[in-house]
Length: 373
Ligand SMILES: *Cc1c(COP(=O)(O)O)cnc(C)c1O
Image (tube, rainbow, N blue to C red; front, side, top):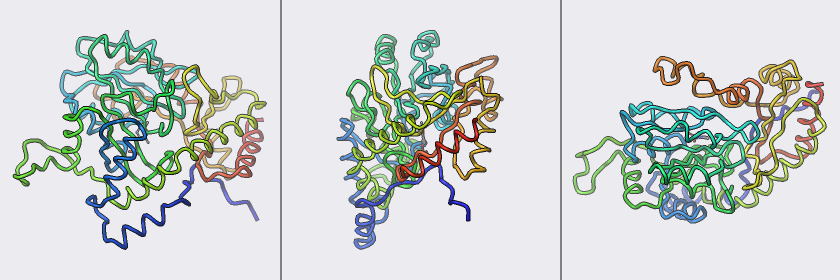
């Protein structure tokens, strides 16, 4: 009999999740009106040190609301990493603004902040930073540039729950910061997201955009187009339970990262995540590996071979300038971002979910040794 496969992600839901969900059913509060929604918003905002938390239906929607709330539109430019998820450009493009890309640092895989300044123009309105795969963006230089050029910061912290930059929580750096609670994130609500802000007007705008811009008093009369981005009480119940255990989850992920690194450090031809930078310890949102050029296979082939051993994997992000859907718009004509391109060709991540056991990690490491030998 063959051993069961190891999925790329399995969440851990054995805290108060079931109890709080049962409470929703028992009380009948299953819509976005229920008490867990505001409790989750308050607790999450407090954890990150922000004045306002606005729970939404997913992390992509949180970014959409952020772009719309900041009034970004035609003629504006937003600087963001080439190496990120499509969620980051969606509303920039739909709003009629122009995405402007910055390549990655080859060691941290985050946006190379030394290359932001050269992309700032009189039309630049905002810098979108994305903390990627477990390490935060080097925020110091970004904050300095934003102050110097009067730019807004949108902080996509979808992968950075509980992570810090120089001891300050990720999610505390943006004019608007966003999170996702997809099941592979350190806090999950199944599907879900959060917008965080300190500014009362920005927060109120996001709250209104989340709820179709209904107006108090004139309920079905609209001055602005919003969306229905509401999070349900069921999702928020999960979120409250997940947040209670965030410190333990981070500790667990760090231990997993250290264990993988120990098991893989003698594997030639593979770049592993760095354990720490000068400003943060890796919290290994996912455990990514990048094949060196000394190996004559690419990520796709390695993933195919691992799959034959029952090991689940995911490819790294496909850079924004390589996205077929954006090709027609001519945003990035002739641009090349070689680090991002290489990460896409050579990078993938191995099973990294919170429910992963030491035994499973050993099997993953063994399989990697075998297929890359
Ligand atoms: C997961 C993720 C998102 C999107 O979140 P969803 O909840 O899946 O919409 C956005 N940005 C980054 C960096 C992510 O990792």
